[in-house]
Image (cartoon, rainbow, N blue to C red):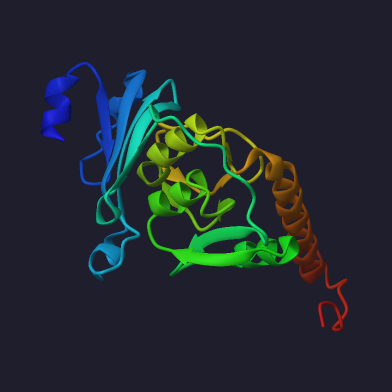
Length: 221
């Protein structure tokens, strides 16, 4: 962090390992850094699904960045030339190995997709960038440093990147919590977003029925 601050003294830095004094909100250019994404996996050698993230966000948009996968000897950057990837058959969808929410398994089932469990958000996102997977859907909550660099690289690779309601991912917010994320091949985005919306609508309807008592005991059996 000290080296980055020395090289870019006019920019702000948001890091998982640093104190957030909110001064960054006064800056258009903010570096979002995660020195170790996937702490659990890093502590379980020979696992390789941990990463290092560095991204530059300008006006809330990640415009440049790198995701390093040191255990794999690989670095992905927004300056790379990206090869075109093709869909897997069946589709492959990456998910958290420790806290994948129900929506992820339900969407995978609806797509007939194979779930592949990994640790680091960077490792999961780069598996989509490299063609090892087709979809990374996350709805269990993250922070900006978990996804800024992966989103920068995935966007440069031509992938769809958004919130799971289809809205843009905006960084350098006062609260760095990022509830959800979708990275996928562009040709799959409309279908995945529609399935997510249907899941949310169904969940909301179920909650309303439960509160009103209108749902029967046989509902969902």
